[in-house]
Length: 460
Image 1 (tube, rainbow, N blue to C red):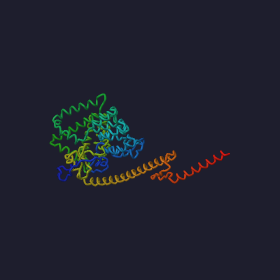
Image 2 (tube, one colour):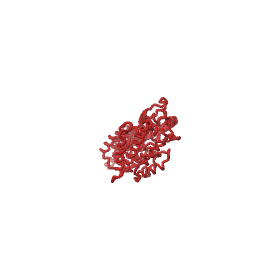
Image 3 (cartoon, one colour):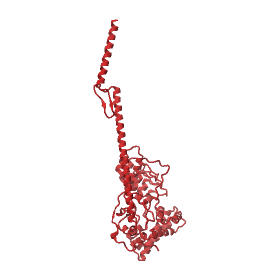
Image 4 (cartoon, rainbow, N blue to C red):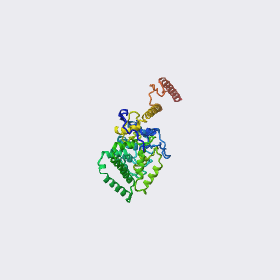
């Protein structure tokens, strides 16, 4: 029997209040690097390791790296400055082959998308390592205004990624976490009332998708999984359990090491119970969960997500809800600032688990912020040095230009001999008044000598 943490509700007074998440403050990338004692499954799309840059990708310049970072964080003003550099490659690739435009599309940042398109960004870039295009990222983000803008600029709708999905299919990306689906069933009680009919309909759809000429095993597996969640919730409520009881089991049903064993067992049973064992997808998933390391990052939730939704780009500036994995979580624990939630209900469900690690995460967050501050200070010094070097370079260029112009005027004899011409910035002195007088006297003497010589010749 799986251990249950906090079967009796924890007092609300010891639970930190929620606060709004700020872009980049508790980024998914930072959170993924933190050792989580109670975490056993990775959030959908969370990278386990930093991707290795393919050899066929050209090295990034400093401005290109900055362009990618600013595209991820939406720093439009800085991007406008960078785009003034005509040599900057606007379609530069990060280590996963993702362009600044694709980062902007996934963020749903319409203003930045329009700015990059105006700068010549390729609307149909297909260098992303998983085969994603800007339109696919916009579809994944569910941003209709960005999708329309890309289509107006000629985005192809027929392109497919590495698992054969186009943008339209990716727009159906679904949060498959059973907690989220349990919340959905609770919001639609008619699903339990009509559960027998719904389940029969689902079985018919599954059979049709598998036996059709163009088999859609992904859709069949997805519908099957939905039916398993509905069956589970129906059985539990029939046995007298409340929706809160069901959610608590998924969230708090953990072993002595904090691994969510109840959730893992449910997911494995659901995958294995798919009735059409001969399908390649089912065989692949069963083998994957058999090899998955319990307590590791690639648990059954990650396998299910990748099989049905496909590989997708993680949101590096926001972490999904730790209770239901909703990627739109906008709240965070105000104490550690490392854990995200949709609302207070999700926080309350997760608190008996999170309170055991909240203090440790707060310390880790403080260390991360200190490291970021140090890196920011170093970056500020570097940028200041670059600014001064650029100013010095421009000053030298200006001096050289002035010197060249003065020299040209001297050669063409356009300078006034009676004037003193001095270029203080370049330290060049042009012939002064005294020198002009000396030249005049020498000229007059030469003219007299010539006249005397002419008179002598005439006398002869």
